[in-house]
Amino acid sequence: MAVLALTGLLASLVVAGTAGAAESPAPAEERVGAEAVRVAEFVAECEFSHRRPDDPIVFPGLPGASHSHSFFGSTVTDAHTNLGDLLESDSTCDPAIDLSSYWVPTLFVDGEPVEPQSATFYYLGEGVNEQTLAQTQPLPQGLKIVAGNAVATGPDDAGVTSRWSCLHAGHVDPSKDFVNCPEGTALESYLDFPQCWDGVNLDSPDHKSHMSYPVAGTCPSTHPVSVPKLRQVLRYPVTGDPSRFELASGAGYTMHGDFFNAWPEPEMERRVTDCIRAVIKCGPDGIPG
Image (cartoon, rainbow, N blue to C red; front, top):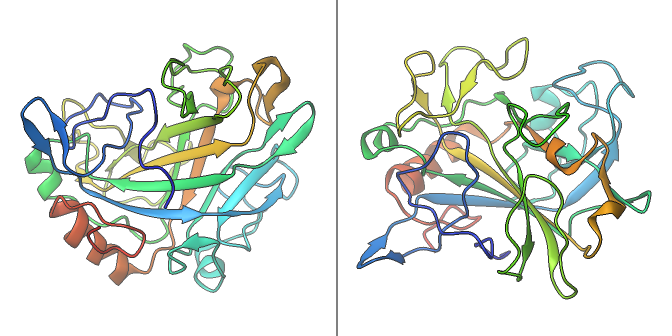
């Protein structure tokens, strides 16, 4: 399995966090002071599937209307994809039962597309207090979530939640924009999705209003249902001068992620019960590691 910690970032507590902040995955039994921190987690490791200028959430039914996206998970995703298509598709993920589709803006280096050498999607129980964590519900099948700001004009714009860092280079501080990674490392992007659902809508007109980030460890009354936090971690085989890098959406701070949930309902329920509510670190098979 891919590295489970983002080098150079402090390990995050399981049940505490700042709304919308990107935090690094903490290894099981990470020690903070004298106390061992338990980790609520299961993961999907998904290889690159294909690249298209499509977005079935933001531009449904409009092929070519989007900037270029790199897709992971379901092998069939295009502008026309619906839940039924995903449930009948193959997947690039480990576990293969995860038929969800994940996509991000394509990274270009010197004008050429470069795909991640690895893509890990963590499902986490952190960011909320113990009571909220114990009430975490499975992500509903068909749920669509968008995180980040694809049209940001600067790193301080609202919704810029992604961070860039370097794998195996602890001295490089994480940044909202591209960073210069030394030789022998890899450019790394990580992004946390909102984990509070309104309990009704699988999507919304702006593709964001049906979801919210927790506030002080609790889901707001408008979005009372806690679901596992999805964290997207991408590692690109590139280093050096970041002026050579550009996302299909623009600068590094426009990094965003789209998620269309097609996990089998019984499997999602099992993992939430056995891994998230139980505060246990599970692997791609959903079994405690």
